[in-house]
Amino acid sequence: MTYAATAALARLLPLERFDAAMVASLPSFAFYTAFLLWAFTAPLRRVWLGIALAVPLALIGFWPVWFGGAA
Image: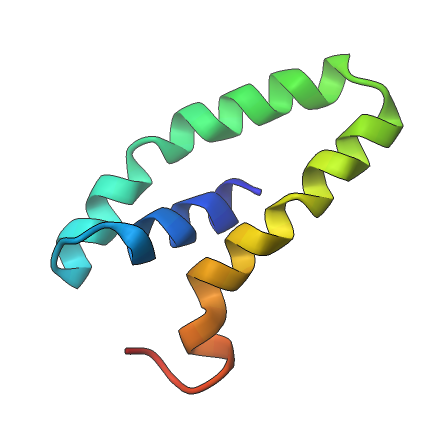
């Protein structure tokens, strides 16, 4: 989930490629920590729903790589 959020953020930021990747990587540590804390306190069904919600983020972040090469 954090990898998908980082990739989506890097794609959506209006910066150069390298700068967008660096800026998007910084909040990934907070995303990862928050997701782990939430995953261990939430019921299993909600955790799977949260993981499923990462699919749109993955599509935004990885679309160019999966379907047509890196832009």
